[in-house]
Length: 55
Ligand SMILES: [Zn+2]
Image (cartoon, rainbow, N blue to C red; front, side, top):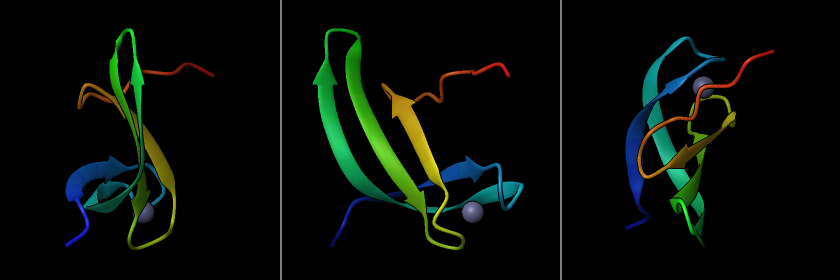
């Protein structure tokens, strides 16, 4: 059973099921890379929160 979670996908514009594809330990916390199961769009979270990006 692969780790998965519900995250907001900007491609689907909805909360969708994401698969965990990578996990990295940083001094800030734990960075996780997820992939949307519907469209393969990648999402990165740090300590379970999605960093806000501008531009
Ligand atoms: Zn998606």
